Amino acid sequence: MLSWKDYYTQEQVRQDRLNEATQERLVRLVSRQKNPSNKKAPTLLLEKVGYRLVGWGNALLRRVADRSLAS
Image 1 (tube, rainbow, N blue to C red):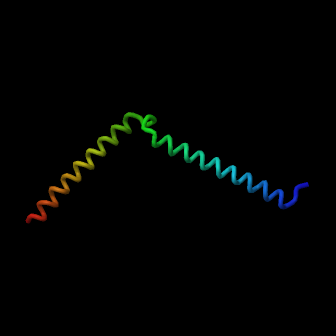
Image 2 (image 1 turned 180 degrees about the vertical axis):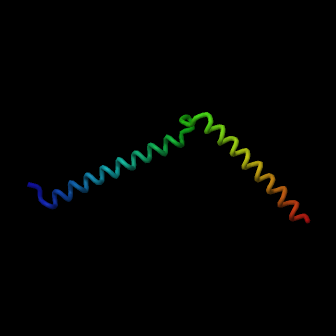
Image 3 (image 1 turned 120 degrees about the vertical axis):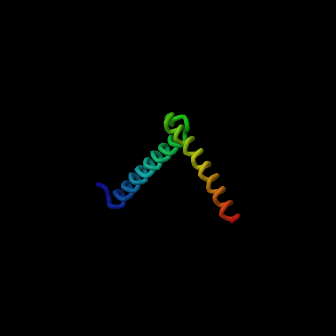
């Protein structure tokens, strides 16, 4: 017959194993997302277009800021 102490210890071990499994799943998920070989072509295209749009927007903001400071 299990004592309360034995039950509590087994429950803690079970909980620790569940936490470890959850942590490993999260690590695998994040590592897959960071791996560029798993990305699809449309995603890569959108990233490149977005990067260029941000650069273009920053250049426009610099021009507007320069003109507003000059006047």
